[in-house]
Amino acid sequence: METYAGILLIASPLFFLFVLAERIYGYFAKGDSFKSMDVISSLSSGYTNTLKDVLGIGISLLSYNWMLEHWAFIKIEYTWLNVLIAFMALDLAGYIGHRINHSVNFFWNQHLIHHSSEEFNLACALRQSISSLVGFFTIFLLPAALLGVDFKIIAIVAPLHLFAQFWYHTEYIGKLGFLEKIIVTPSHHRVHHAINPVYLDKNMGQIFIFWDFMFGTFQEELDDVPPVYGITRQVNSWNPIKINFQHFWLMVKDAVRADSWWDAIRIWFMPTGWRPADVEAKYPEPKIEDPYNFEKYYPDVSMGVLTWSWIQFFTTFGFLMYFFMALGRMDVGEMAVYGLFMFFSVYCYTEFMGKNPLAIWQELAKNGLGLYLFVKHDGWFGLESINAGLNYVVMAYFIVATLVTGYFVLTEFREKPDAVPLK
Image (cartoon, rainbow, N blue to C red; front, top):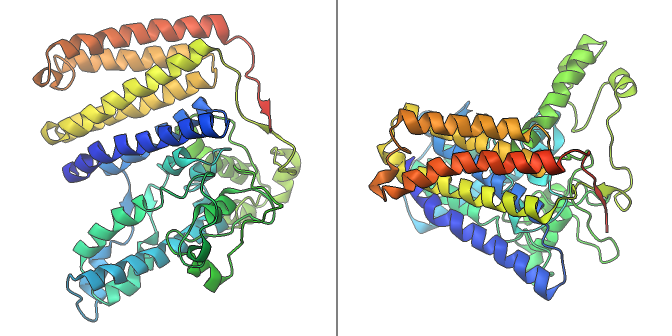
């Protein structure tokens, strides 16, 4: 846990710098709008995912170590060749799991967050799930386990495999010649994130694209069909915690509403988006039918609200980085309450970004929790070890954040947020 937190201390700022550099390049070189709220939402999803991983929230039904111990026929030692074999096995497992996520209602819930942005940029690469609380797909590493691939190899390869999926989330890199037949490129992944009918559920590969050629899920990006991004049932929220569970909540409601008990059971295992016919008729859900004619979710906000959203985002980033630094001296209880505070922080300011009038009460509750933790720990979890004055900064933040959020809610959040048309 501490080792992973140490990696994130280095990796997180680097990812954010790449994201901001891409957005700045797009703004000045291509004339693209910065889309601040979308960027903040995506990066905030990254916060929640890293918190989930660091805190170890979630279980795996079948661990790789258990399969290795009980089912291995031979034992493969640590060599660079075996690292390459493990990488290939992990990528095939990733392809299979990815395809299931796109194919089955229940599993789509844990992947929807990654597709929820209606933009396509490096930031949306960080929209990762916190709703995958139970790991099912370790079983797809069975070939590696049967061959006795050492767990240390998997432990090295897994984060490299994940980080290698970051770079191709961009519109600013065209097709890459012969590499288009071997690896997943930005062109391939633009197709994957698109809701155009010809592109839906295509290009499931994570590092190597030849799995898609082999299993019939490949689709080239077409010059006359520009990709339109997002999901067909819009999330209409900047809040990554809400987005993570929207589809699950819809399935729960549909299961309760269904007249047939069989429909209530099979809804979880049916193809993605399936709903019982009687429920669909009584409780229709809006869905994008024409990808070239719909309104993107983008509430109109003032420069003040936008600026305060960025301040809240970077302040939360500071709290997160300190959490990673202090993790080694926290007990389990302290880690749990700090993690709760962080999740609550993301929830509050992303609701504020969507102009939710309840944002003032949410912010008040969050800062009340912060002040309680401050008093209980006689400071902010040992922050005085860096600089005693920082404790006063934290305490002042809790008070100022409540006042500023309250000001904007009372003066600007009176009307329903407007969406802007697709351009």
